[in-house]
Image (spheres, rainbow, N blue to C red):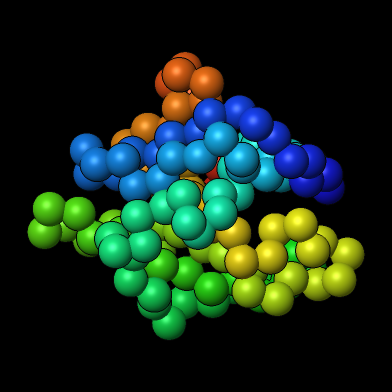
Length: 122
C-alpha cells in the first residue's frame, strides 16, 4: 500500500452537488482496488455529512468510521469513511475523508470524469 501526497484536482459530486473538492488529496494505492482519493475535511462540505454508527476494520489501515451524505432531501448512506486512528503503519490517511467512487455521481480528477470502478462495493 502506498499513500503519496498529490496536487491533482479532485472533485466529488453526490446528488448533483459538489460535496468535496481539493488540490491536496492523498492517493491510496492498494493491490486489487481502485485508487482511493483521501481528502482533507476542510475541503469537504461537512454540513452535508452525517456520522453513522457503521464501522469496519481493515487489517492494513485500522478501524473506519462512516458518514452519510444528505443532499436535496436524499440520503446516501455510508458512502464516506475515515480512519480517525489508523494503525501506526498507515498514518498518512488519519482523519481524511474518502468517498466510495462506486456510489457517488461522479469523481473528477484534473477535470476528467473517472470511470466508475467495479468492486465488491459496487
